[in-house]
Length: 336
Ligand code: UDP
Ligand code: MG
Image 1 (cartoon, protein in one colour):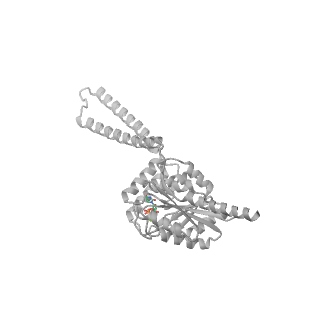
Image 2: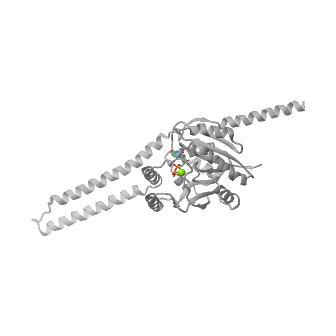
Image 3: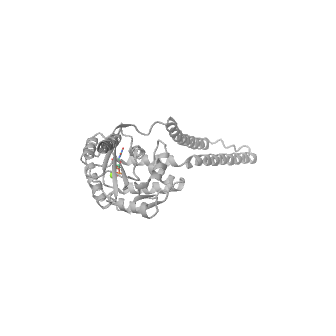
């Protein structure tokens, strides 16, 4: 029996990309004719015509099986991917963007890595960032540098979430059910043997990116908080250092009093400086603790990661079942 490769494709306002994406994938699977493929589009609450176009592509697909899940609102790419993964059935599952910035041809190399070279998954990595603003690359590099130093996970600069993985890796990722999903961190955290597949940055086929600069900063920040508890430990160290400093200062004042009782240092300035300094430190620390508390609050509520509004996944299975039943009946009547 042919093995199946399932592509999980999150889409948010991508009406102009869907058809081109399907055609691109179809081309690649001409070379991968030994495999069946399923494309699962996840419509992440698009406000344009994305869902209708997905349905059209699903109905007119000449190769492979095209299925879709429409979420009840825009939950974000990470949740959309989770939705896709939790419904996936393929022997190999790939996560890929619909805008053709993740070249489908790489699937061939990726598949080779997991099928023949003994890897559990293969992940694409951009070696150039052409077409990207300078400042974005700069911040991105700084982010990787910091997160690798302060967390247990090891993120590789330029790594994307375009990957192909075996079933066991999918199960591992699904078992991580946190709501604040920093996917890159989760992939790195679950481990398994990964092969990096390098490629040159590609520009979007149509439409525009959903990421604003501030959006990226927020993403990096939440990734950091999700995987690093180092700041909390840092707070404790800072507290200890400030206490020791205060103690040394107290001893210093006491000694100068002993030496010269009239030289009492009642300086208004020094008191203000220390007060303001400590006030600032305390507020910062409270804010930091608040950030973690907010995460705990959201996780404890344990709301579902996504809601599904519409899908054809069960339908297509039902169709297949119906066909089978009819076949069986025909066989039965023949036997009779
Ligand atoms: N995406 C999504 N939900 C969102 C934002 C983005 O499903 O809320 C999808 C989007 O349709 C695309 C992929 O995530 O397939 C990557 O988005 P984009 O191309 O905007 O990001 P970039 O490539 O610029 O990092
Ligand atoms: Mg893109």
